[in-house]
Image (cartoon, rainbow, N blue to C red; front, side, top):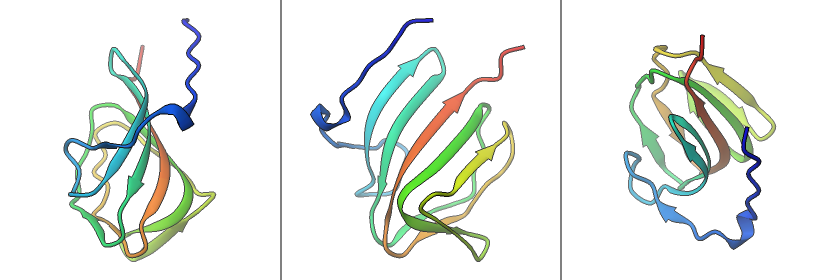
Length: 106
């Protein structure tokens, strides 16, 4: 495995493809279906339910979001198995999170 070291403070926030307007990201890793990024959700963030073919992980660093009237705030870790519908997502105040996508390797 290749060692990857990234100083996140040296990366610029970028618009995030496939997310609602004003959502920003810093991509830390993007390698053969494995992706890790910091994600900044703007206040008023809304995203419809969806699924992925890969394992998805969230760790909320700041702020909060809601799924099905349940609020998840800073310090919350969520693991979403492949092909499981999750959402819709809402964030009144916005949030800052670490998101990791990894294909399941058998």
